[in-house]
Length: 204
Image (cartoon, rainbow, N blue to C red; front, side, top):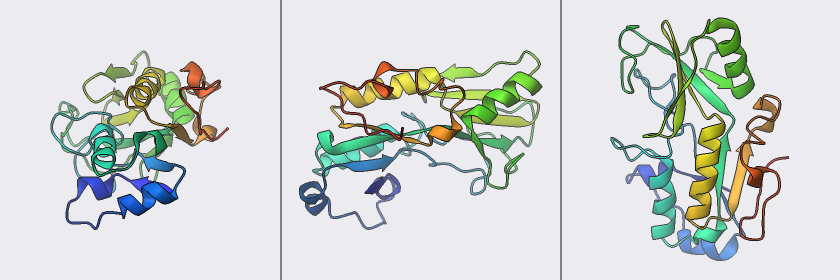
């Protein structure tokens, strides 16, 4: 079953029956991505931030929300996105988080798989590289008016470590087909091997 962070973020929405869910479910897959979309917002923002000093729309707030409402941490499965989103900047000189944007660039909804991101950076970047941002725990790539955010290997490692720190059951991946030569799948040993302390519920 899927658990949506939006129900934790938006207090006006009805909350799932947490008590009943925690007793009935073996695990709950947390959809920890797509918080911000270029088709819905006129500004750039990471779609799957682990943390966010400016907003409650982040995975840490979501996970803590489920736990404080009574859902056992050891039944929560953290969703890891193998996709990102691309925005078109309104002003190439304004590219910090929250800067004005004018929708997606390449695809109808702005979504872009990790392997396409890597291909784009390699072929179009002309030496420009992505940058890891530890505040949000996300990778950014900026070239001209194109702004892309995605989860690279370092982000995956940090999110897996976070899941372990919080005592979560494990992770799931959406979706493996977006990986590039298993770079993300091999970023963290638990993504392949798992352990008695950290059960993996990935899509292999």
